[in-house]
Image (cartoon, rainbow, N blue to C red):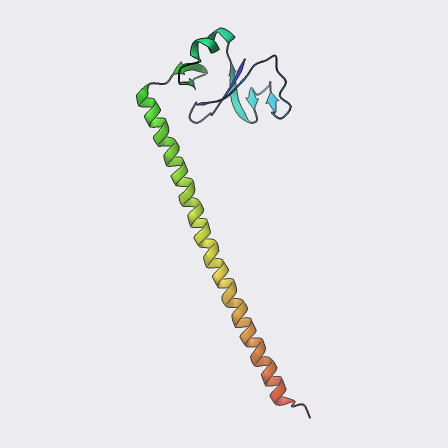
Length: 127
């Protein structure tokens, strides 16, 4: 059985029994990845032994997660989410500023064009 895991946190992302076919997943046997994430292999017996436990992959070995590690993992995930949200907020604010600057340019362009047309009309009045 192949066990797909997150290479940063070591947390298990999925189990892939060898006897099944996975048409929507890319399994790279040479690089030992599934959809770009690494995997290790484990026996069905090991899988049964670990079924009711929280586990992670560390140095290519599946081991049980302690309660303290679980809290650290939760905090790490929360920190990553907050960091990504902060980044997206900054991008949103930057986009808003660019949008406002474009709007100002358009408005100034329209004002200039209106003044230009008025000047032309004043210079060449219609009779």
